[in-house]
Image (tube, rainbow, N blue to C red; front, side, top):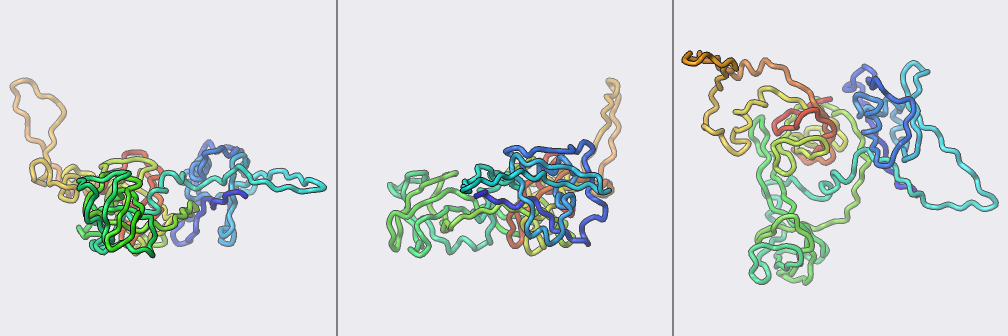
Length: 378
């Protein structure tokens, strides 16, 4: 049986989707044969300048969205322009009935996913954002075998708080830095740093566990959470937010200041703000937030090399003759910067939400994606 993965869907909200029809690419192909490794986002990008508006090109209505098309490698997509507005359709594959007996065999083809599952799969089962005290009650490593300082695969540890009813498979975490809202400096949550996995070897008031996997060094006082049954679903339904959204990118995975397409970013908005799995947002660069003085503010760990946020002075690139005194340049103020327009340069799609924050995948970006950039309605 085919592995069915729901195709790229747009839940149409008339009040938010632009009245203009989805803009076509100038070189949109009349026919395209789906290749192994394609994603629906990538295929739609061959036809549309805004790939997340794919269902509009298929002319799907709300009823059809409940049972959308499935697209497989080898299928042929045809662009029909005869009806006035462009429309996509699939060429139906010929079928042959075998007689006197029909034999059914599993198909080696897998439906084309919306996005690459391998990019975000590790983030679906790990609680990467937690509350201030959320890990306090979790089982804790109280000692290490052989009095080791750090633990890795194959090492054993003693854990207090593990109960039999939660199973024998556990994940190990450490609470990281707070995630701050750049607008008001409120704490939205704390990063939960995933360290590895452990298996219980002996239950008791203090259980004995063996470290089976580690991505970082594990220490005493690190916390454990049960590893539940993981059934990742990659049926993402791209859609615009149902309300106006204006948030910020507050961190890039791995602690990088800049990142790019197919990377993970944390947003300052979550389910409480109306975001849900599949929400598509535009990335914008504000010249105010792009200033060097803001990027070295306390939100990012330090107050700048001089500790001052005074306006910086810029001088002409013209080199004066030797012996000539250079005139003092004009200071650039926050008021001057605020008059410059924001610049849209990319798209993100939310794939996991928390109460006040969310994770999103950078789908498109024409420049490096930087912490403190804005996300807003596409």
